[in-house]
Image (tube, rainbow, N blue to C red; front, side, top):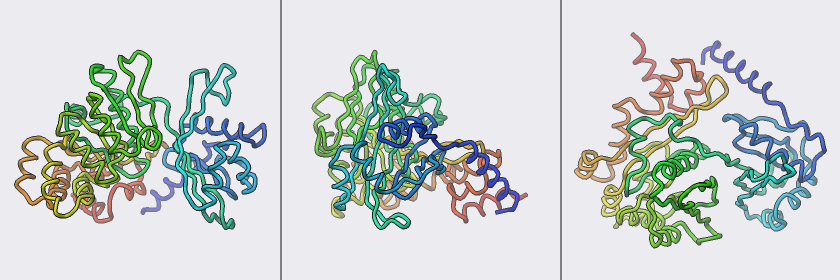
Length: 403
């Protein structure tokens, strides 16, 4: 990295750090002031809250970690607060070596408790684990994902026109991919809400673990039903099978994580419903091979063609940190039309993923191509290019730009 880029990145980072002041905790530290802190973090547009003994409180803000308290949280204080903040079985469960995932909700009232108005709510997805942290042999580490109360407007998310028009087919399967924290759930919720706003005759149901965005709004003809794994149904596959008997138009599946879920989603797409699900993948070409790894080898070829018949699109998203301290979404995607299906069907199925990624590369729609354009516009620094491309891709783009 050039020295100018390094100095510029350091100055930007320093300025952004100064702009983020820790929470004051003027009334001391207790369960209620921690809840106030949770609400404050959401008001600051934080994405995550990280709490563990022996450490300052930390939040994730625009892709960066920010110190959010002036004090270090003593481990014995943290242990006592856990029981007051959350259900009492969490601490012994985690201390017994079993991580806990839990969704929690804070509700406002007429007294504006925790700074929330009456009817206002905040939801968090929580993960508790026991771990060694610094000098502490064991502490409970809590990561809280803040679930925004407002679902983004799909029309303002910068989606490419052809992709936008393809998002809500009458049947089949759509996949949204990316790493943790790349906005998969947010993108899916925006699609569901757009459908409810623009086509109220379509019934939307979801199966989630846990439920994140609350989809229903006053005035909906039929409020969306959202099933939670472990509370309402035992598994994603069971939820899909239950939904098939409920005349849905769209079935949202939180994650395509096992063979039974995958088979149920393909079947639902074949019989006339549109399924939307997520995968942890890095490019659209990874989606089909990833799904087929769930399938016994003797069934893969037939299953691959079943999957090809229902796939409507694959989207993979990344969030890049911009020079103004915000984040910019970039996407790789492929839309399945008759021509692409015919081309893939004529090839051995193990080659499908490479062919899909080659289309995106030839059309210069890779993450690397988009990040390079953002860098040339001054919207991301050179360091952030490493998030979106390999060293060889960077050399390729630099050589292409050289006269």
